[in-house]
Amino acid sequence: MKRLSTWLALASVILLASSALAVEVDPKLPNYKPASGVSGNLKSIGSDTLNNLMTLWAEGFRSHYPSVKIEIEGKGSSTAPPALIAGTAHFGPMSREMKSKEIDEFEKKYGYKPAVLRVAVDALAVYVHKDNPIACLSLEQVDAIFSKNRKGGHGKDIATWGDLGLTGKWADKPISLYGRNSASGTYGYFKEVALFKGDYKDNVKEQPGSSAVVQAVASDMYAIGYSGVGYKTADVKAVPLSLKAGEKCFAANADNAYSGDYPLSRFLYIYTNKNPNQALDPLPREFIKYVLSRQGQQVVIKDGYYPVSQMLAEQDLQAFGIK
Image 1 (cartoon, rainbow, N blue to C red):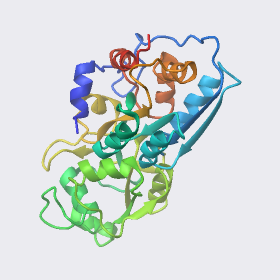
Image 2 (image 1 turned 180 degrees about the vertical axis):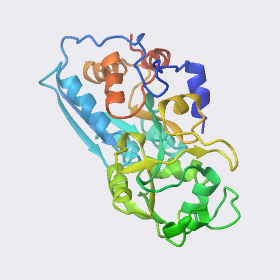
Image 3 (image 1 turned 60 degrees about the vertical axis):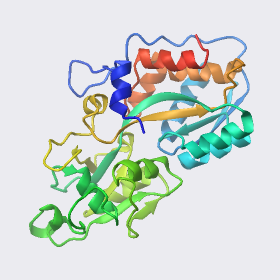
């Protein structure tokens, strides 16, 4: 998997305002200008992480085209490739890159690869209850908490908060584990990066969606779980993470996501069926232009994620043959 920081460095994604933690949309992104002759229906099937974003984009897009109908189904990134292959969806939002097997299956049917847009940046957060005093975790520790294999190299299993150095009432309390199910792109990304491709422990309580993970952690004092930063609430806290034990921990915020210092930074994607030898139909073309416009990226900030730069948006639009 390509490191997010490499992509961002190439794309010059520096979108921070004067305040270190405030985020602004790249002023070079174009304002969206409605086109004529846009009508019909769109269907999106895929990521739960992107479910709210897709809904907000749909609402904004329909403010320009009230007759357009957009149906959004967000049951997990793994549902996107089959829907695109079957032709039952125009868009397949995903919180991970497509696997080579999924791309091969698409290409086997259509003779070309699926097209992809990078539509937002996420800092996949490790959440604990807001009253939990834990200040920092390394990926090795996260792996030892969630994985039965400990491929990250931590010396022993981590099963209680005392194993992480917490004292008092926390010391002997078992860590309650919450996560996503295997249809989720977040499940797959966390497994690959945070668990070093290891296997989840059997006692991880799988939740149906990103919001459900956060709600579960908020209601369980001794819980830990993972979900997109856009789902953060006041009842949980995102634990700063380090790539290796003993290194500096970085908070899950825009600054650290763009720099690549936060170790669970990732792009969020929309895949679609774009024949390289044909122009897109007006409806999907205009939706894509809206998503990568100034207005579309303001929606990204509204939903708690981080916007992409004009340079990166332009690269993806050019790949789609969109001006």
